[in-house]
Length: 178
Image 1 (spheres, rainbow, N blue to C red):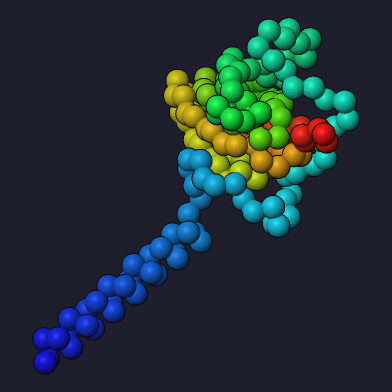
Image 2: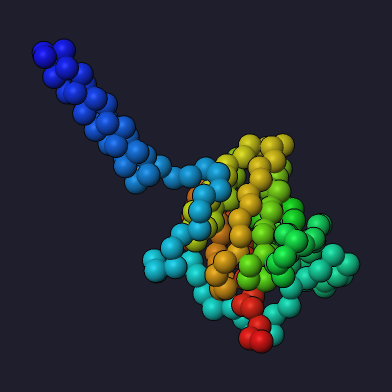
């Protein structure tokens, strides 16, 4: 009888410890890799309206503005979807992201190869709950589905955060009404 009581107490303690660990981890850790998109109900300090008359660059586009990223890969995101998979490269050097602006359509899967040249940088996407830090010569990958339209600021926490000069934008163009 005493052994059965002890086993029940131990089981309850183990369940409580696991529950505490799960709840604590989900509240206190900043994800260093991709996580699920943040709920739309949270207000964002880094989201703005999409500029008027903006177009999503395609593979062959030759843009005058070199700050706008041209995708290196564009393909269907899935067999029965209009959404596209778009792969971009962004580098960080001399306290600047190059290119600094990525434009995609709502629903697209965005893949970013992030490479660091001269010192340690991070790339923080607060509206998508993602952050990657890289040292010179390292490449990190960020991937997410652009589910909400808007112009979203991304920045380097190590370089001054939102107020620093190392920043860029992900512009998610809304779906056109049919």
